[in-house]
Image (cartoon, rainbow, N blue to C red; front, side, top):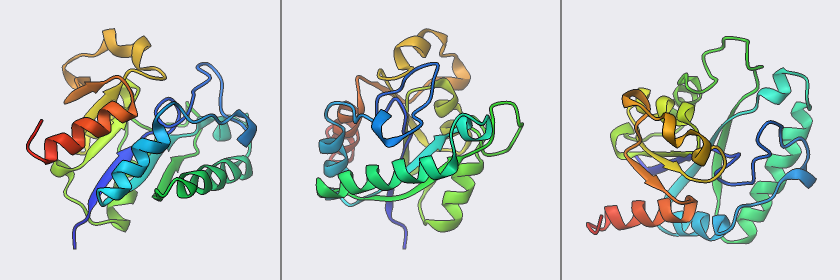
Length: 187
């Protein structure tokens, strides 16, 4: 059975992004305003939330996979405490220059998710803050939303035809309002 799935980038969408650096430990992780409520709204509406994130700091030796695991466990615990659930997370652990097939804008992480979860790409959204997020989502046939948090304000003027999102939103909450309104025939 196909489920309602939504893909969300992590850094800059769910949490504060120290642009030019990495979230290396749980103490660095700060949820952006309204994110927990937005994730709750998606869960309450029956969406499976899947995180798709490049984590090049591991491949580049800036922090360890164990640090990412601790951050992920704590993030998911806090999200659950708000009544929401992150169904799965797919992370590219390769360095920025490794040339892998999973680092966005490549689509390897989405291919992995498609093997594990049943969804219709054309009916599924990917919310991200970078042009590489939008390109990956479009290449995989997803609807895309670019948020103006994280890298969004820095990259919005560089959008071209290959990276033009289906929608631009101020933040994750605005994106969720758009998605939920759209599916109710209001958008």
